[in-house]
Length: 200
Image 1 (tube, rainbow, N blue to C red):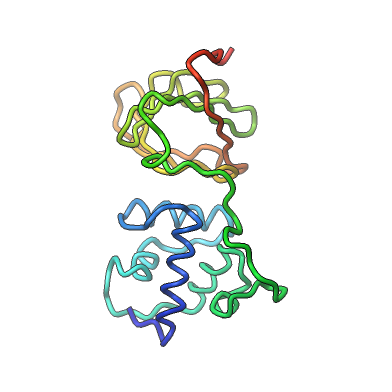
Image 2: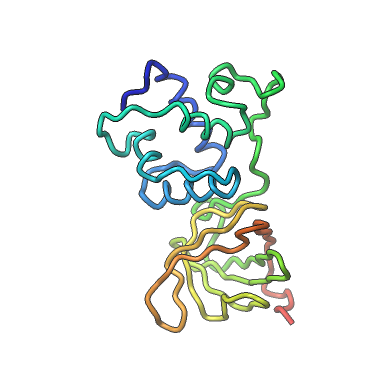
């Protein structure tokens, strides 16, 4: 990648993005998920191919546009890439180390098979899921959502107040599909115990 002399700042930008999403970007699905998170936050579409190029996942010797770097910096809460490189926010103040993400679950690191979670999103959606291991979840109960008991899906990261992107959703044995929960308002989550009442 031709980075126009900004090698160190771009490397820092990649690290900050990975810290913000609490996940190292290393697969095509990772870049697809980041593209969707950027769109959800900024309403700007950046191609997954461009993101792969910035991360060095593909190398086709195409220069990264300054506008793309500005978008990534804005995703982190900076005014633009120059502000990021200088370590300042739009008002000149210091940026907190984690400007956008609140509670999050890195599925591989924080969940054990058998763990139960309640996912909620607007308007009035409730979904209880059980973690089965290998990033696989099974819906055990739901209310006001297209997800139904017995459906399974895969997910690697959950971030409160952000949309939840799930993959390999299997409904009634049909071909797996991708699905987004809480596209407009984001999702909330809370752990459940086996003794908790199921959705009524």
